[in-house]
Image (cartoon, rainbow, N blue to C red):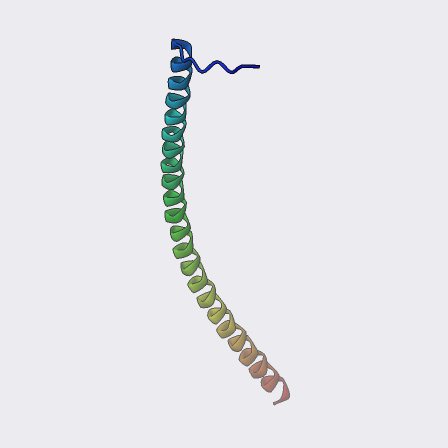
Length: 88
């Protein structure tokens, strides 16, 4: 069984096709990575915006809780005043 070491034009075309195909794949992957990087940047901006919104929401919730405690205190004092008026 002898191996034929001769190279003809079809071998060269096949090799060139593999090299060109490999280069195309590399560039396609690089482009896909760039697109994913842009998507990640957009997501990071969105997350930052959401975090700022959540901070504002927390501030509002804390203020609401403070006002609710004040209202509860006022109601308690009114109830005490009503009971004092009933006793007298």
